[in-house]
Image (cartoon, rainbow, N blue to C red; front, side):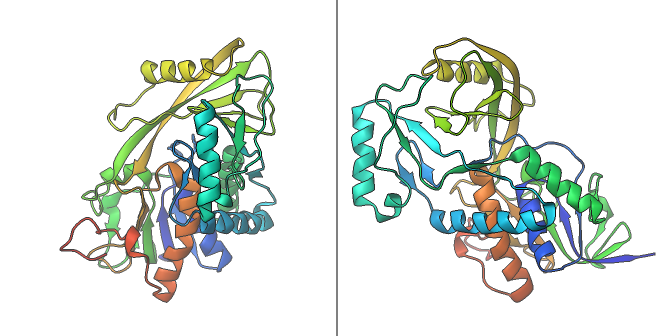
Length: 351
């Protein structure tokens, strides 16, 4: 017997989960196809950060994205019964006095940054920070493992999760049918797997390989903080620490790169001078776009086919914020910002 759903979502990362939340919130029928393979979202640090910490700048719609995420996580708590927000603010270790002066200069001169850069510096025990640290206001972390475990568990309980690989050849767009499921809309939120998708494999989505390591420290650091110098260091509930992640736009090979692991160990040694045990290394491929804004919207030819991809290193903030805009576009025909148009890099095609 043919089943009828409002949506099919293909994917299991941040884009898919945040869009699924919109459908739960609005009582829409849907199924999610997710084969269980861990992608960039599942191995991410879960950093929620409104500031670019190399140059002490902010980014497009940062304040709106932070506010929207806090609201969404409260809504998710109502049906998952879990709190995913970890209030462990980022403390950026300064390299020298000049960085401290630049931080204060940006605080004084940029009204948007005044909201995020604390003018009060502090020192952290257990790590080398002779010039102190600056705290990023409204920064935090997502409990990544709990987020995906709880969201996928809820979807499974509700009969909304199909744990198998989506086979493109079985999709009949003329009839809007896939494997006995008739759908009103289909959304591809596959991350870097979009390269295998015959409907969207012409889009310029680039992989950015990231590594992180799990380590056990001989001398603990403050678990209420997220420490940042070259990379992020923070304590996990599993009694080990996360340190990462790297960025590599050239290497598209599967597997752990020893060069990346060495880069992480070198970065850690610059401020953590005690012994530690390297427990494991992990990697993922972030889907990125050259202008660092996601690709969100409708297929060029199929009115009920959509893509939500290219979230990059800000998968949590981008995933949540643009899932709402995409929902309003699909359900109420509210135009999406031109800045995230699917075909914006082709002047002859409109998204």
